[in-house]
Structures are given as C-alpha cells and as structure tokens.
Image: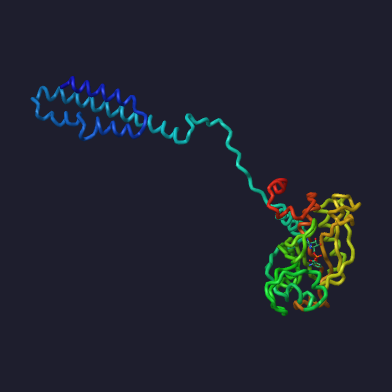
Length: 344
Ligand code: FA5
C-alpha cells in the first residue's frame, strides 16, 4: 500500500509538471484530488485496516494529499499568469515602452474664429446671444424696413420654407439682423449684443460666396451713440483680429434698416491689394455691412428714437477666416477634407 501511494504521487507530479492550460489543470485536480480519486478512496478505506497499519498509512496518505494540494496551488498561479500573458499577447509586459499616441480632435476653423470674434467684443462689453435659423418674414424683412415687394429683398436671395406672401411665412434666415429686432423687442437699453450663427442664401457659389455661411451680428443702443462709436468699435475689432498693419477700408453702403449705412473691407492678403481671383480684382475683401439703426426700426421695437440711437453690423465669418489664415476658397471649409482641416 505505501508503495502504491509513492507511485501515485510520482505519476501525479510528473503529469502536473507537463500541464500548461487551466483546463488540463482542472482535469488533473479531479483525477488526483477529487472525490472519486484513488487518493480519496485510499483515505476512506483506512477504517477497515488494523490500528497500527491505519496510523502509518494514514500519515503517509495525508502527506501525499498535502503535497499534491500545495503543488497544485503553485501550478494554478503559474498557469493563470501565463494565460493572461497569452491573452493580451505581451509576455512579459514592457512598462518602459512609450504609450500609443492618441489622435486629438480640434475645433473647426470657423468655430475658432467665431469664438475669437465674440471674445474681442466681450472685452468691449458686448453680451453673446443666439437666435433661430428658421425665421419669419416679419423678422428677416418687414421689421427691418423691407416690406413685401421692396426691391431690397433682391439683396437677400431667400430659401423659403412656406409658399405664402405674408409676414408669417417661414424662411431660412438670410442674415443675423432679425436678431436686432428680437433683442430690441425683449430688452431695454442700454444694449450691447453680438449674435453668432448660420445664415443661408439661394446663391451660386464662388471663391468668396457660399449658400450657407456664418455671420456675427452686433447691436449697441444707448443714449448718445454716434457714427464715431460705430467706427471706433469696428476699427478696434479689425486691429485685434488682423493686426495694426493690415489695411481697412470703410465706405458708404445701403441697407434699408440703417441710416447712414456702410461697409468695411480688408486688403486682400493674396495680392496685397493689387487685384486677384480671390478679391475679384478689387484688392479688397468685404467683411461686413454696418450702419446707424434706422429710427423706424427702433420705434417699431418700442424704443423711442428721439431718446436713443444705436449702431449695428453684420460680419461674414468665413470671409474673416479666409483673410486670417490665407485660405484661397470659401468652399474648402465645408468640403470635409481632413487634409485642409488638419492645418488649423
Ligand atoms: C447683411 O447681411 C446685413 N445684414 C449686414 C448689416 C447688419 C448691415 C447690420 C447693416 C447693419 P451683407 O449681405 O452685405 O449684409 O452680408 C454681410 C457680410 O456677410 C458680407 O460683408 C460678407 O462678409 C458676408 N457674406 C454675404 N454673403 C455671403 C456669401 N454668400 N458667402 C459668404 N459670406 C457672405
């Protein structure tokens, strides 16, 4: 009987030394340490032996069981470590290797320029507010002194959402100026607001025109606001965004909702004002329309034009980004081409 136990122990240990997987190890445990194993049967049969034999054989059987159990525990640990190593495919793990680079996302250039524009005006005391892209005829046109059939509607080729000719007809806003009216209807002067947002026009595209583009509207209403405030605010804006050395041109223009009206243009970065495809040969890129808020518009919004005056402007964000970063065509911005976008 002791010889049987010695044989059993040496066979079990030699099999254990060749085991490599958790499955094989479990089979081994059932075979040598399980309830139906030869060792368990030997321990159970001890009661049938005479006392002397029982003591000696019992001690030996328990030794064998303890030895097999402790060798099993050690093997179980080794097998589980190596199976983790295999499953992650790195054995051993080199913790000194540099980490894998994580591709960083970035803001679209238009988003960045909108944030920059708003930050410049925030420093001058303007609040930022947003408004609806689906607008009513009333806010986009009528309240801005552009009634039905007014020729100035041709300045804003419109994408209509309703087929009716009244002030409730819905459209995709052609400019951010409707927000002038919404702000003046709901806030009391003094007012200083900028409104960034998307605008839409039913227009053919070229290097400086798209059918969807962004504007930032500006509105300031207070006692004693003059054209001088308007010019100084806009020149300060141009100096902040384009630097002191870039040429800025201010000249008269017509918009029905301002009087007088004007426009600001920046010298073309591509040809240095000598004329090229980008600036249409003029040497200048128009970035914004502006003017003193028309007294009729103030009155329509419940603000007394004999007490208050104000200025407004609407700037094209894509045009400013073109000039800021030297982009040669507005259509790059929404082409979804990562080779273009990764440059910013
Ligand atoms: C307007 O939209 C007026 N609402 C601006 C205004 C506001 C005037 C307040 C007076 C007082 P205009 O159509 O010129 O004006 O557009 C303003 C700016 O938007 C332009 O100077 C230009 O920078 C930009 N812009 C106009 N059309 C396009 C277009 N199709 N694609 C890209 N940018 C455009």
